[in-house]
Structures are given as C-alpha cells and as structure tokens.
Image (cartoon, rainbow, N blue to C red; front, side, top):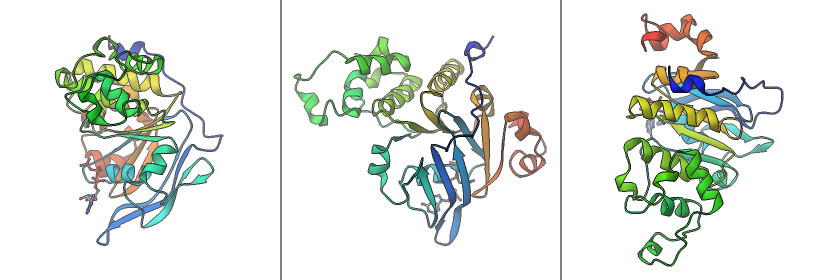
Length: 266
Ligand SMILES: Nc1ncnc2c1ncn2[C@@H]1O[C@H](COP(=O)(O)OP(=O)(O)OP(=O)(O)O)[C@@H](O)[C@H]1O
C-alpha cells in the first residue's frame, strides 16, 4: 500500500473565516502580455491548495506575485486584513510568507544544521562557517524542524552529500526555520524518486493545518496524493477550482489543459 494512504488527511477547510491569503483581480503584464489575468484566489488558514496548469499557464508568475518578487500591473494581495500589495519581498517574508523554489539554494559545503542556522539568522554571515565558534548542537527548534523534514539523522552531514530529495527537504526546512504562516512551494516533488515523492506528500499533509500550504505541481499522481482543493490555471487566468474529482470531470479543464485523454493520463 502507498505509504501516504496511512497519513491522516486534514479535512477540507471550509472558507467561513477570513482567508489568510487573498489575490483580488491580480494581473501582471510583460510587455503587454498578460501572464496572470484577473486572478481571484482565497486560501483558508491551514489549507493545502494545489495549483495546476499547462506550461506557461502563469503558475510560477502567480507565486512570484504573491511573494512580492514581482509587482502586479493591477489587483491586490491581502494577508488576512492587510493589503500587502507592493510592500516588497522582504516585508512580505517578514509578514509570514515563505517561498521554496524548485532549485534548492542551500549552501552545499555547509552541514544541514549550519544551513538551518543561516536560514534562521543564528549563523548570521556565511563566512562565519570558516570559524568553528558557533553552536554545533541544534536548538530545540532546529531539531524539531529537522525531524519534521526527515533530516534529523543527517543533521551533521554536508549538504553536498545529500540526495536530491533530501536537498529539497533541506530547503523546505530552511523556509520553516523562518516561522512562516504560509508556505509557497514550486514543484516540490520534481525529480524525486517514488519513495521520496511519497515522503514529500506525507510531509506536506503533515504541514497543512499548522501551516497554510500553496503548491504548484505538474505531476498529477502527486497532486492526487496531497490535494484537497485544486485551482486550475489556463492562459494566465483561473479556469476552474474544485476537488480532484470535480476537476477531473470538468469539460473546460479536459479541453483546455488535459486534452481528450483526461486527467488520469496527465
Ligand atoms: N519575466 C517575464 N517576461 C516575459 N514573459 C514572461 C516572464 N515570466 C513569465 N513570462 C511568460 O508568462 C507566461 C506564464 O509563465 P509562467 O512561468 O508563470 O508559467 P507556468 O504555468 O509556471 O509554466 P511552467 O509550468 O512551464 O513553469 C509564459 O508565457 C511565460 O513565457
């Protein structure tokens, strides 16, 4: 049996309370081309939301907008009752929104623990690694983050010795070290083995609830492992939103994104 099947899934989150993250008519144009168009999105506190869509649908650009990496041409982004549009990437990160990119940006010559210390500002400057005068034991928080991401046993190993999956988990652990309320993930299972993919699904299901998680994903098998609500993007706009079953049977989605073969063959 798939290991993920044993993980208890958080119930779909009802949207009664104010969403923790909202996009309102979010649009960005590059030289007049609308990469993201009029996107309305409402993510509940503790929700695990998956965004799917064909290449060029605007998924990464949407995450770039939400984390403040790029500015919208029109529309707004709200973190609970606060309009965070245009406040800048660093201020948005400080407000509790963490982003993990597809390509890990860990320091390969440092250990897992040292990377976590850099991420949480316990090891303030990278060159301090040259001197062995910083704590070599994990704090309780570092140990907890390492344990949650399956890296506790590897905490003193250099990042260069880690597998591809472990590197991805390390970068997620580095994001978690900064205490985000919301975590944005760009294809977290890309390039992973089947076992690593299952473990990543378990990890995301475990994170949901204590964190709000927004995931871009291409791999439909992975999406089915983790999804509660799926948002489908097409040509920069939101085409559909619903459960996996609703999305799989949505004629517009089948037509626009999945082709006549349907979702099960995506
Ligand atoms: N900085 C940019 N300048 C010009 N066009 C851009 C820029 N960034 C993205 N685009 C265009 O915007 C559209 C959306 O791109 P985006 O990368 O967001 O799509 P995506 O859904 O994430 O695709 P993929 O799954 O292939 O990563 C594409 O047509 C892309 O070429």
